[in-house]
Length: 492
Image 1 (tube, rainbow, N blue to C red):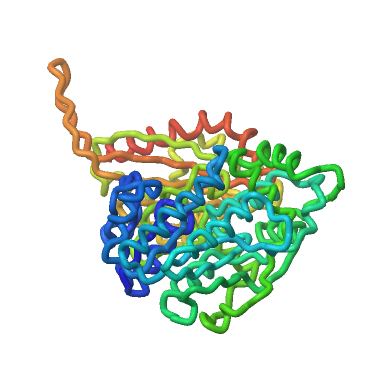
Image 2: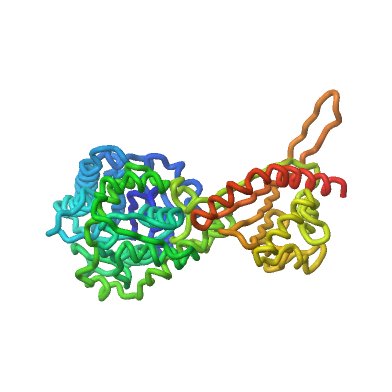
């Protein structure tokens, strides 16, 4: 089918497009700022139309010659009046689809019993479905609750609360039941309904196999993330409004996004009708497995050659234009040095790091770090290397292990020392032809650039404290390390 995706720059839309392409559909996107999609690995495989979903003419133009419209627009951006804007978007898309002969609209809404007093967020989600269905074009509405995947607002709120707070005084809503669903299962349903005519014009509820309270979600996240058990004490005096204030303080989510989400936590969001499972049958991921998939790729946040490469699409992992608050907190120390050595020469020197060679900086400080690691039960610097100048993926290098090796441009070492989190020492080498020609100095040919990244993903509150304690020592280690590594390569 020829499918128009509205909301391609959003969380679900950006992950849905590769799934649509993989199923053989042709895809068109409407985006106010098409440049936001340039970093996506699928950009050359889709048609991108510049336009605003709030402009009827733009949407009519985008709807021409398409079979189906995927409505994934969400107006909850912290500004007042989001419900009214969502209704406006829905009415425009409804009318544009009717004008251009679109055969169906697929909409992703929110779970919640319509008989309950739904929060403004959930009420707006369901109102949008009703507005879309008022037109002549049949609508397939999928209603989901908590979506588990790196970058999902609900998941990032859960991640931040559990990782930062070893103990929490929480409102009574932590006992509310929910039925979380993995982002990849949401995508399977969205693609699947396009292939089953019996889904046209119907409302379906989707969820994973586990029905859990928010308290249980927090505890299970801590277990899957390798954190100590969290102390959760619910009290009756914290209203959702008060809760949203401390959620805004503890998590990186903008207050305008956190508040509607917290307001919605008082509503039970569970599947009461599983009709979709008979029309689009597959086994959804369990909650713990969905958490594991969302967490396992945090180390690849800045390595485009892995998760963002062709064939490596992972909807549960980070994406290039996810918001800044998604993906978990990563601390980093970055150093960049130009070199007259070629990339091959620089990488050859880099490949000798550790062992007898050392780390091109203070041997005393690295020795102290190794001794401290041994003192707390780690392996220290005693493992050395398999070979003095050659490396392969999986090789030990003192208290590191080679995690990625792409000569002559990438070497990533993963720490195996005892630390409250995960750490990486990564080197990237790139060609940078540049001639510096000063009258008083000889011409210097810059042939390569070394980028040195020390990155740390903290585990819990102690992980953050650890980074702030060791960060002052980095200024004595990492600047000289990058510079001496380059000097060594140039001398050779």
